[in-house]
Image (cartoon, rainbow, N blue to C red; front, side, top):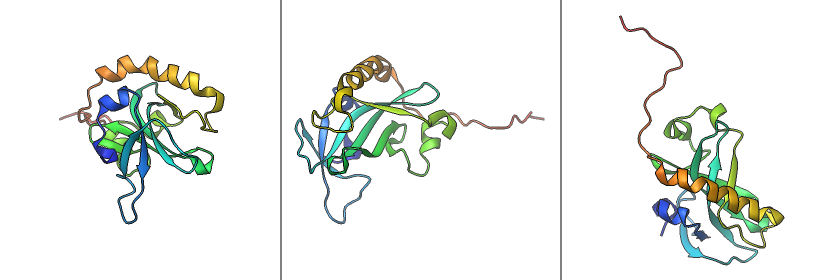
Length: 156
């Protein structure tokens, strides 16, 4: 399976995946295999929830490279266009947001890896915040947002 084929239901279940990087493949859509265990040299993909600055929550997938202390290297957020990298051109438009409504943001993992040095003792708060957001995430509709204008134009 590829990253962009992951169904929302798998994220809601808290599934984790191992990323298999193949030379010459699309870095935005790597091959992934479901897993429950990682090695210290692996690259993991974790079900999560993104809490944006405006208070909204979105399903997310976080890529973590354990050789680099487990810090997140990419975050993919589910929008009406499917899974999009948070830093991809067009993400704000797809999410129907301005940058001040997104950043700063927090991401909480559903099932952090026990040996993740970045998460450490914060695994329980991550799981709790993910579970708290689940009822809202399951009811969300991912439809094309209505255009918003910064300027009010009165029709003549």
